[in-house]
Image 1 (cartoon, rainbow, N blue to C red):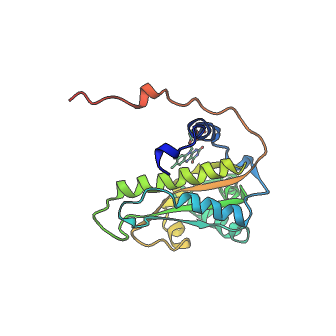
Image 2 (image 1 turned 90 degrees about the vertical axis):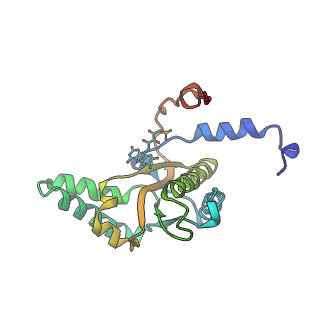
Image 3 (image 1 turned 135 degrees about the vertical axis):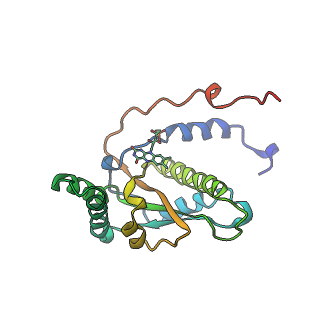
Length: 200
Ligand SMILES: Cc1cc2nc3c(=O)[nH]c(=O)nc-3n(C[C@H](O)[C@H](O)[C@H](O)COP(=O)(O)O)c2cc1C
């Protein structure tokens, strides 16, 4: 939409939505999650991200409810592999994470797909923009959301379970659902701390 037709309420509305997005940890996200139409809307939002040369460097893999026990096995195994001294309680805690949040998506980024001149930094910027757009849409739909990472995502059995290509990596999971308990968010940086003017 050309600037002259931009509704005057957009800046305030945009900032209100962006400020409303807060990390709500997956254990505080319950059913219902997004329905099929809302899920589609989330991916349409993600697809608005800038993407240099349209290489489509990222994708999302949903982990449906019936696949959660398999994910729990992968999480449990990943912990045992990297820490043979892990207690049963610690393994159970790792397994438990597979069952949180009604909608669980794995972000996958491809470092090489399409034009190899588009380096991995550009691809991550595109992926970040896609994730933020998706999170903002989830917020607009009334859901809470969170990103979670962890060592398990780099483990070989995890990569194999999700059939990641050698050029692909998985930076984080995205959890979305109904908020059971909201906590006050962390303070956001002041604009003066994140922007400066080049003194050439
Ligand atoms: C790629 C990525 C991975 C993250 N992984 C985790 C995580 O494993 N655990 C966690 O508590 N938060 C995680 N976060 C969320 C940040 O902690 C959170 O965004 C930050 O504290 C700011 O809070 P806000 O999202 O409410 O603004 C992750 C964020 C990003 C960008």
